[in-house]
Image 1 (cartoon, rainbow, N blue to C red):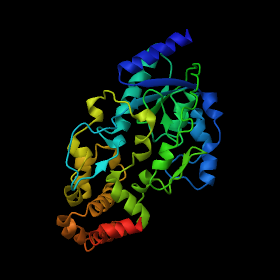
Image 2 (cartoon, helix red, strand yellow; image 1 turned 30 degrees about the vertical axis):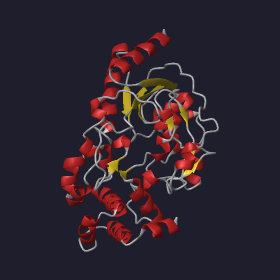
Image 3 (cartoon, one colour; image 1 turned 45 degrees about the vertical axis):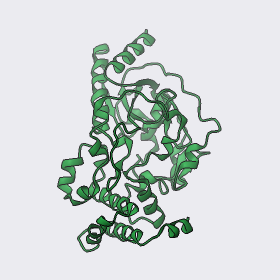
Image 4 (cartoon, helix red, strand yellow; image 1 turned 90 degrees about the horizontal axis):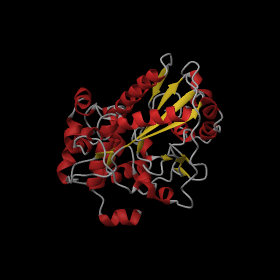
Length: 352
C-alpha cells in the first residue's frame, strides 16, 4: 500500500515538472555523518550554510513531527542553444538562467504538498528550497536521488548534476528509497578542471575560500589570482567548470522554456549592466536567482571580465570606476582590469 502511494506521488510529481523524486525517513537524515563539522573544522565553510548540525539533519526541528522528507530534482539547461557574440558580454552560470529556480521549485513542491493533503487530509507539510535548514544535497542523497561526487555536487545517473534540489517535509511516515552507490569511480576530471584547486576529492568537499563560484559572491577585495580566474572565465555569477567536464553531464534533453530565459539576459551586455543603478539592476535582473547577492558583486565581476577581454573602447568606462563612488572591491577590480590593457601576450605567457 505504501509503495503504491509513493508511486502515485512520484507520478503526480512528474506531471507537474519534477524530474525525479525520492523518499527519506526522518531517522535516515538524522543518522547522516557529521560531515559539516569536518567541513567547518577544515575552514572550508562559505558562511551561507545552516551552522547548527542538528538542524541540518533533523527535519523535526523545522516541521513538528516530521516523519518523511520527499526530495525532488529538476534538471536545467547547461548548453547554450543560441549563438551570441561574446565581445563586451559576460554570462550567468547555468543555474541562474531563466526564472529564479527558488520560485519554480517552491511552486511545484507546494502543489505536491497539496496533492499529499488529498491523500492524507490531516497531514502537514513544509517546503524548503536552498534557504531551509536542511542540507539539500544531504536530503537528496538520503532519498536516493544520486551520490555525492568528488566536487561535492549530487550526481544523478540519468540527469547529471545540473539539477535544482528541494524538499517537501511531511508528518506522514513513508519508507525510505534505497541510496545510490557511488558512480565516480577513478574519474578526476572535475578535480583537474577546477581553476583554483578548490576540490578536496578524498573528502568530496569544496573549499569555499578557493571556489570560483563562491568568489563571484564574495564582497571582499579579491586576490590577483581570483580576479584573473573570474575575468578569464567570462562568468559574472557562479561557475560551471567542474560540472561541465563531468561525463554524466554530457547528455542533452528537453527543458521547460521558463528555465531558459532570454539569451540577452543570461549573456548580459556588460557596459549596459555597469550603467545601471541598484534599483535598475533589480528591475532588469531581479528575476534571476543570480541577482540575490545584489548589483555590487555582479558589477565587480563584470569589470573583471571586461578587463580580461581588453577591448580598447572600454578603457574610458573602466577608468571612470576609479573616480566614481563605489566599493573598494569594485575599484580594485577596476585597477586590475586597466592593468590588463598594458599586458602583452608574451607577458601573460611568461607569467603562466
